[in-house]
Length: 295
Ligand code: SF4
Image 1: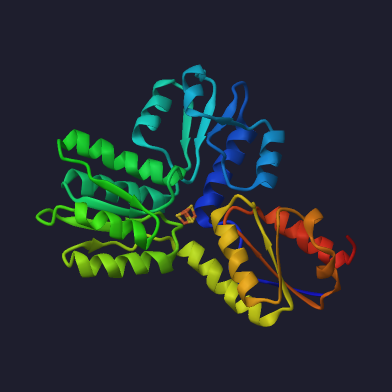
Image 2: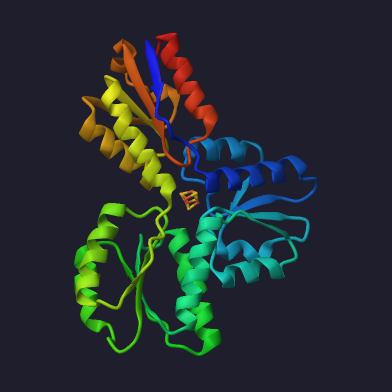
């Protein structure tokens, strides 16, 4: 069997950085407890391994119980400024693993809010990154004494429903969660541009997601079946799986080597790709198992 890996797959730079920070914190920890604020990544396999090494997940309600000898790693999605302030006040060591690209979006939102710009933001409700970015804008608006107008939308329909509530005498902007679909963003952006010609459109979708999709499209041309490796709760992994199902005769989504379907062991050429929060060792285990030709 020949295994072909997608040119770009697995950890994105932001997740790799946050994982390295957590890994170092665990290795160097002496007496306290190491936490991440929310699950470090959307990958049950990787989370299980970190848990075995002593990493615990901290929720907002647990912040007051932190001790000064504890360490908290802020994950790649980032947190809202008020959460960061609460964490810092505890005296615990706070390691900021917020992806630099997400930080840029937090700053952008704060700048818009400070200037009183009405914001359309494409993203997923309740996603950690969105909560952090919305919070950065809220804080900036409060400090500047401006009216905060943040409109979270996830599709064209929602943009259509909200457009009439926009005050056309004030500036308007559109930007996005870093992992949002480029296709849906472009649809919304064309619509809003037509309705609000003065709108400032900022393309803030991270290239990492797009690059994994593009590489998968190429991969599908070369193989008989594609295995997508990643958390079934990970949005970017599920989008990869949807593309693989569309472009390849056989496609499967697995979280670990144990889940490889039997039919993939019979193929001559198998393609591999993985979501942005899939660790290298999980990918390697899948490859090893396929090459062993046993399940
Ligand atoms: S997808 Fe992009 S923005 Fe999000 S964590 Fe990864 S590198 Fe950062």
